[in-house]
Length: 195
Image 1 (spheres, helix red, strand yellow):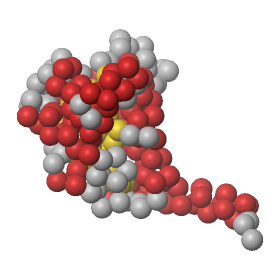
Image 2 (cartoon, rainbow, N blue to C red; image 1 turned 90 degrees about the vertical axis):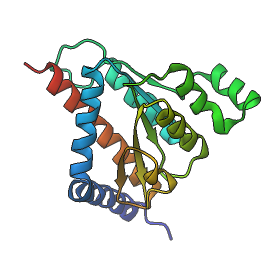
Image 3 (cartoon, one colour; image 1 turned 120 degrees about the vertical axis):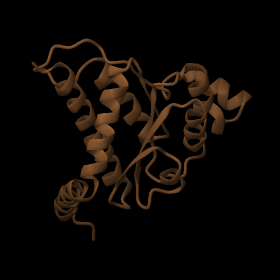
Image 4 (cartoon, rainbow, N blue to C red; image 1 turned 30 degrees about the vertical axis):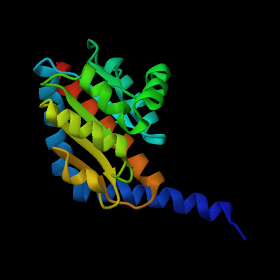
């Protein structure tokens, strides 16, 4: 019989344990990626985010944090970031006309410039449309950062920078992605605008 109290407790313990594993195994990668994000902004570039499903929602969430702000103790201008996951006309036209696997790559082709960074989010690391977006970005000399989980899938071998959340549980991976994304944003805000 399902015990919701035990489930509740174990879910929180597993989430906390995953965060501690991120600290142990991803620290250097997270700090290196944060430096790249800050350098992207300082050099006049923008962030573009892509992902599917829950990761698409994470793209929208994180792009908004950069544009609007995350840390309320810092007054700052908007930082240029956009989610390639939010324009339904664009996504449905692309899916219909050029295939869903090409929708993000097409947007990277049209909107991305050398000096930008593509942040690709995939819990499996095997999403075809995310892989194609990374390949298009690299062909345009756009830096690529992948937020992944599990074993990192195919994407771990093609992105310039990777953060692989040390879990096989999709919920914990997604929680890790948002936590790391918030850390990226706060580091950028504090390094660039905290007096």
